[in-house]
Length: 338
Image (cartoon, rainbow, N blue to C red; front, top):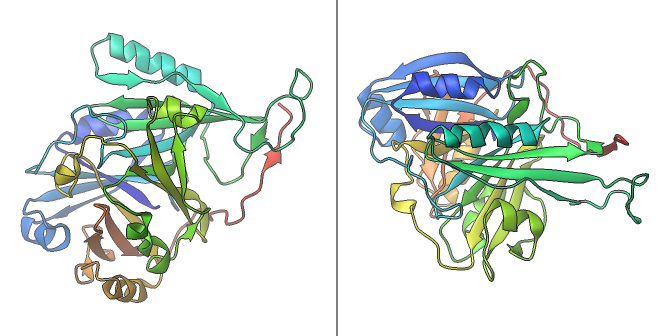
């Protein structure tokens, strides 16, 4: 995943907010209302601002879509697993500091719902009984749901994965680029998103599975109650171990916000990929009856096209040749003994 695209009418606050997490403006551009209507289906003038975390330009960026006229407002607090919900995930060096910061901001009157950091041994990398000397290899994670943005943070203990979350030590809140992205989608089957592999070339991480409240991590992060769960399918690019997608279909009835989950609204409404073979990918998307736009120049003068799938996910595919940061393509766990 290259970018999250976030609709807003208050770019100054958004730039200030994301700067706390290490994101800085690297590019700005504008579109007329006619150009925006042709590529994005929204008749409104548009200013776009691309933000990057540190030197990581290969994935995990955010693009602010500053619309003169917003279609809808996704900026109201919603349940964690509402259909249409989009969450962005970052690595951090200090998850408890983040919890403290958001708790203070909540007490100051800002709208945040904060989960307790929960630790789990997701990989059982070293096995055996755990004690002071054979320390657990764990991930600790929590979620922060807000009217402005939805975060998931994670911290690693005892291991390192090169290329999966890079933290500039000068970053105020000790956070990385966006490492993966959670989508709660509307559908009866994960077959609806098979095109992510067959048209866009992503690899399925594993067979689809059901997660639920019987698992420590999902129960805490998604605030699952007894009997609640979701079908889950992860996808990763063969060209980058980072920037993963995680797709969820709830198995119980949840709030449905899909009717306002569209480009032109406030909030996360669009995600982007890039490729050197844009025409080929466009043809594959056409073959899957996903009704893409024609190949057009986006506001950054990049050849691109957009489409929305039946599950409600909107994408822009960009033709891009030059990336400075070389992404890691092989997943390797390095034990750190800390």
